[in-house]
Length: 545
Image 1 (cartoon, rainbow, N blue to C red):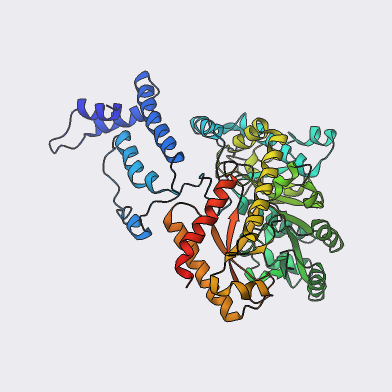
Image 2 (cartoon, rainbow, N blue to C red):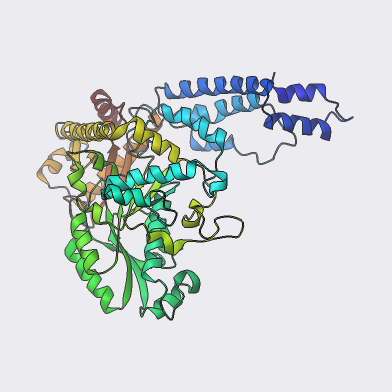
């Protein structure tokens, strides 16, 4: 029996069968007190959770067959219980209503999204992180994890920028320097990068106190601009729409340049757009390059973008949330040539660094870049303090850089190199498997480890092979692929995602529904890849009439 239940049993109750205030206080005190009894009770709960996790991770099916509406009904009660309840009973409720119906993301046949299996050690370290409950906003609440995080960020900075030993010796623990900002994910990393870019471009002058003090309208007037824009390709992540909104530009201030058939930004069109912006006296806050688009893994010509950004005298940001870990591979890092010239780079830990959710980062080439977003308070992050919260959009936050540091040490550079190269090998295997099957059409060659293709029903296969599909044909095939992807999800045995592409061989303006596979899970085998295709062929038999 739990100590909370024991407290309920032994303390006096009032006349209506409700725990008295004294008994409630005793129960709550026991929840927070470290004692032999509490430790034993905690161990019992941990054993139950460990069993649940083990059962979940060993599950074969990716999804249960419950529909979304029925699942939502399980969580339709909004009444907060009056009294504390027994922990074990609550864990049992979680097991039945949440764990049982959660998506098995770590399955080797869940190959549709950028989240996959985790190394086992992060589950162990997760308990340590929660147990210490450090708050990285301030050194007073994270004495050791604050310099520890700075070290982890510096390791990633070195991976990208390859500065000298003297550079890192000077800046790793220098309070005034910021080699990067650790945040909860790629979206906040991109927002933070653009926040730094905006404040640096529209910074203080002799007659202007800076955008952070006077705001965007006054900043534009002071610097002689009529407006401000962010420029990237049509395939930039939707987080940049959030950033444009938050930074006061509106989505209208996000200019998207067309891409070629490889999904790369068209540099001549970019140069023309920059010229037009200059003619209209628009401030270009930043030029964004993709290092692994979400849809197809396409990589922009980063060196060319860096050159253009230098000519335009503007900030160059690279969104490498997905593709940044290519830098671990001696064979493939050349795909990211030019990334070292970026003013800022986003990498998302929960993708190809194999970290839990909540570990993203933006790395900054210049250690002084983040000074323009620094904020202070009298009671915390005071001026001149080493507190990490002074140059971060987030205030209180957990020390999830512990997972990053652990992975960099436990997996190591060569370990990541092997993981990355194996993922790309499996993507090429899938591409070949798709090409060898008449049922499918390869839509994009894998630049990294993301692949798009589609199912072609029998009655259109000859036209597809001859390049003779009409718009009506493609529309019908689109509907079939949408249905196929949804049917595969409901079947629960395997999973791929889907997207719409407009840079295929069928030309711009012809949206093609694509089945999208992400091959990052180290446990996915060639047999699993073949099984995913077999499932699709089997499920699609109803469309072959």
